[in-house]
Amino acid sequence: MQPYLKRVQYYETDMMGIAHHANYIRWMEEARIDFMDQMGFPYARMEAEGIISPVRAVSCRYIKPCTFGDAVRISVAVEGFNGVVLTLRYDMTREADGALICQATSEHVFLRRDGGIIRMKRDMPEFSAALEGMCAQP
Image 1 (tube, rainbow, N blue to C red):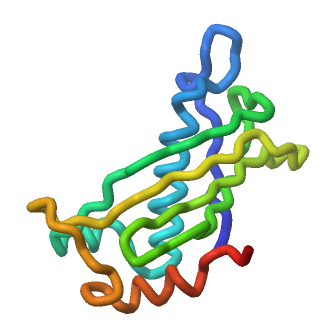
Image 2: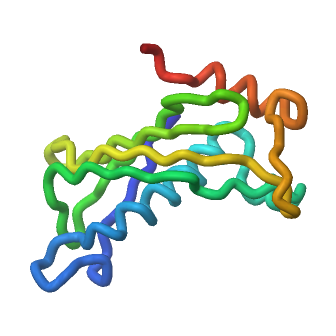
C-alpha cells in the first residue's frame, strides 16, 4: 500500500504555528479512506450497501511537531482483525527529513445502519480475507 500524503494547511495550526493535535485524528480518517480505496473496498461503496464503520477507540502518541506546509506521510497497516473489530496502525513521518511525528491506532467495528453487527467472514468474505492477509506479523 502506498502511504497517504497530507500537506499541513495553515488553518490546521495553532497560535504557535504547530499543527493542532486534534487534526491528526482527521488525517487518520483521510488515510484510512485512502487505504480502503487502495484495497479495492471503498468506504463509499460500503455505505451505499448500508454498512457503517464507527470508531470504537483511538490512541495517538505525539512525538515531534509539524508546521504549516510540512508534508506528512501516513502509513496505514492492519494491526489486528478478529472478524468483528479492526485495529489500524498509523505511522506519520515528516517527508522532508523522515522524522517520526506521530504513532497512532484506531479500532473500528462494522455495523448495518440499523445497528446490527456484521460478521465479516460471513457477510463480506473478500474484505475479511484481505484484512486477515494484511495483519501485522507479531
